[in-house]
Amino acid sequence: MTRVLILGAAGSLARVVTRYLLAHTDTHLTLYLRNAERLSFPDMSRVTIVEGDVMDSHRLEAAMEGQDVVCASLSGNIASQAENIIRAMKARHLNRLIFISSMGIYDEVPGENYGNELATYREAATVVEASGLEYTLLRPGWFTNGDEVNYTLTHKCEPFLGQSVSRLSIADLITRLVTTPELYVRESLGIARV
Ligand SMILES: NC(=O)c1ccc[n+]([C@@H]2O[C@H](COP(=O)([O-])OP(=O)(O)OC[C@H]3O[C@@H](n4cnc5c(N)ncnc54)[C@H](OP(=O)(O)O)[C@@H]3O)[C@@H](O)[C@H]2O)c1
Image (tube, rainbow, N blue to C red):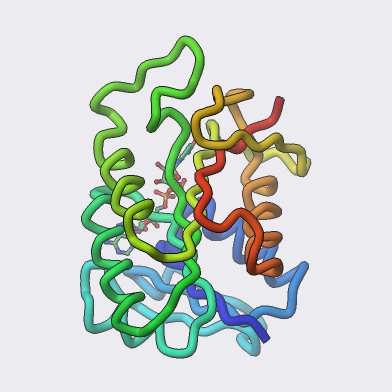
């Protein structure tokens, strides 16, 4: 059984990813978040909840024990968070990282210039891409709550297609990444509905 560590598990995207992974796979999920009271599940058989900050290296490394995939869906200073996550993964000999970023970090969205707004996302992407880990960076468009799974992927150096994407679509892609280990390794993917 694949074990997935979800960082930032109380976030709006992570909650949908959690639900989707539980429904569509037999993975075991470790949900890492700053305030554990924010999550509860009627059936805890496939879920472990760990309270912690990703900047707390000691807790983060402990949560990484025995995991196969790390999925980071965070906010704030994500460049520093990326550095800490990568350090912890290397310390625990983990390799597979799925990292949620944003559209616009390479100025790849036609007609848009996000400037300094995305500075920490750019820096985080540079850190992840230089990590030597088996990463997949996801650059979603604006999130929607739509119940459709409908997305088009764009690769690094390609113009971004679309503007928005349902959280469910991102969850579907993450599920494919988790269940197909070689899929889109060392890639940075734009994801939106066209
Ligand atoms: N919304 C959009 O349309 C959109 C589009 C493209 C990209 N994105 C990006 O996608 C990412 C996920 O989005 P989202 O809507 O799920 O964001 P969110 O709801 O703000 O979730 C992010 C989570 O990260 C957690 N977090 C932040 N710093 C942490 C730390 N040091 N340790 C542990 N947890 C920490 C937060 O925890 P707390 O709950 O404790 O604060 C929060 O639950 C974000 O980076 C966002 O900017 C969003």
